[in-house]
Image (cartoon, rainbow, N blue to C red; front, side, top):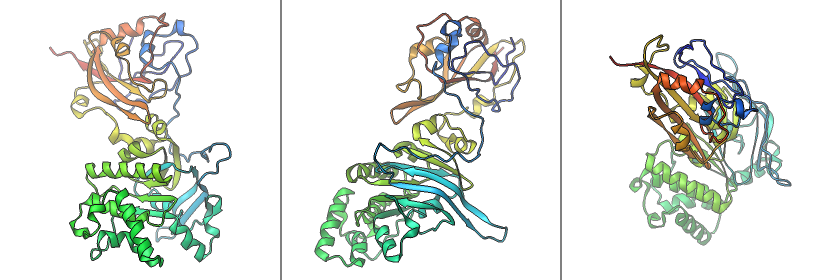
Length: 428
């Protein structure tokens, strides 16, 4: 049997499959597989991988088929984007900022939009409050098309849609209380009502003791809390977040995300956010949409998209979160040992689908006593354990595992994919 890098054992094959083609390191595609229909003929190695099939399609960045969230019976989606397109003229020709974008957002949902710079995220976000008008298609809130509203109706709409930004846009000569209350003062609300509303919001965001402080005396996280309070002052039903945590340190980012989640829960807010930080999506969002060159290439529940991304654009965005092959290990790997002795390096991937609670050590023990855990880790996203582990073991042990027939029906499936990353020659 050849010893080649890129060898992949997919989920639940009913017969052994060992690709003999030599693939260059990093170029091996993880093969999808059918559901195991005969446990009695499966390999022992399938005890390490999920028996529940999770086929993946080849990497493409073709637009995803038009897909809408399915709300509960009798429940209308809060936001509907129907075939939205937006283009701009430029000296180089027409720029398509958005191309036939369709999706829905449920009431009370925290919905994330991700994509590379220039993918169309901000343009899409601004169509919600008509700061951008689509060339074709329509945006509807509670079934009412935004594009059909006159100027007075748009003013009312925008008071129902709060917005926070990467830059806090606070008035330096005004106190925290005055900054938060400014939209109400412009709207002609009575001073006593303004004070009551502002004080309640400052309590909500944890800044009651900073009411009479000027912005220069606040930290970045505190300034963003002021921005959030100001965005909520009209009691909106939708909150838009445009890179709201990009200018913050990790600790402040975490506190703002916790605050947004609490506010969404307490106030029943629908939150739509765009960010380049995938950790933000992982931490707070229920569902995510991926834009690439103005087109939707993927969307779905966060744990599903993060656990098994289908589009190459999605994989590229998620790569910083993944426990990839460290450079020092990559430098030692070769694609083929030939007849040399050595170790094989395996990547065990877990997408959280078949066994969301985690990885059993009993499963890992099936690799044998010579196996060594090299690198990796697991995260939990919406109750689903996901991640990857890099494991090395002697090639002889790996070959023995593959050769053994499968009569073990009491197995405990774990990893969804096992991939051979390469080989390390034995030291002489």
